[in-house]
Image (cartoon, rainbow, N blue to C red; front, side, top):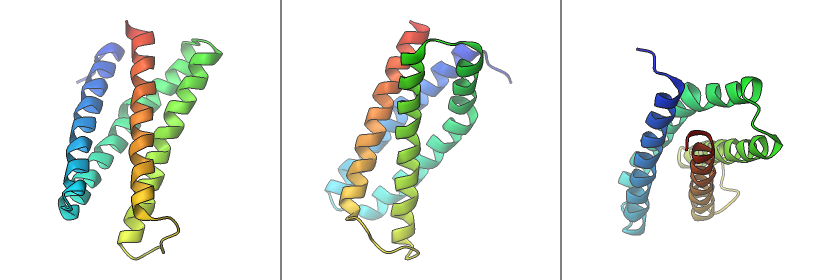
Amino acid sequence: MVFDVKTQAMVNLTIQVLLIITMSGAVYLAKKRNLGRHCTIMRIAVLLQIIAIASVMLPSMLGYIEYEPLGIFFNFEMGIHHTLGLAVIVIWIYINLVFAGVMRIRVRLVTAMRLTLVSWILALIFGLHMYLLIWM
């Protein structure tokens, strides 16, 4: 089933809102010291995010850069949005490698986790702004 670009954007926006709600629940679990459930939820959430990036966001970004030049400021904002999103994935990989014993801790895990949370929230804010610029 093939969706038009606007429908894909709306589906992605819905997924992002659900992921941020899920992430909020995972933060709550971490604060309650239920780290096992927190880690499981975050692993699933980031995997879903990776799927959304690969299936919707990356093709959209490439399409906007190539076919829909929306100006230097929009492209700069899109670059920040994608950089923050990729930072979330890189830090997530680092945290999982530390938990798996593959890497040694270089930064306190709480600091890395908070940096991931802030990066994800900022990426969402930039993404929402870009969605509004394009579709509203």
